[in-house]
Image 1 (cartoon, rainbow, N blue to C red):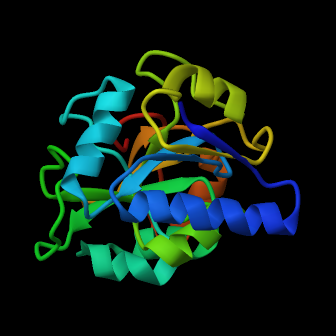
Image 2 (cartoon, helix red, strand yellow; image 1 turned 180 degrees about the vertical axis):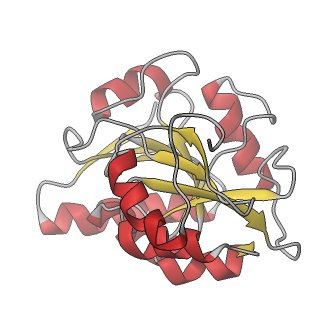
Length: 222
């Protein structure tokens, strides 16, 4: 049974971040709040922990988890050949509900699954998640739910689905967002929308217009 960690006071918040960080450092799993939905987190550089994350969700290696980081600048430590338009999107919308799929650095010593040489990166706009990421470094984080079920929007829903699979659940109350991040493929010269989420296309295209590219609809670029 997972330990529930409330964050109603500053002392509780620090305790929750400390305990969640300790669990992740030793290869365990933690449920954490983000700005979109609750997530199930593992140390991105601990292959057994990432495998346990996928197993907890009932997901195979063909669906690798995204990686959350604390700072936009970390993108260059994880990715290569990032288009200028993708950097502009990161500058505008990070922290926030934007995930960029990029070519990963070949030197990275991790195993997120069948990534085909890519990594999906995001900086969440949530104080607890960012404070935890400052302590842990990059975390593999996927929505806190069993595959096929709705993503958890509060700690109760996460506990109902994942109680036996995680060590701790950081309970920050209902998330403000409720929609998953928008995912954009940045592995080509032109952007491709992989999932439309909390960040709308109008805002994305507002940034892309400076680079004479745009996304017309969900799926490959027009």
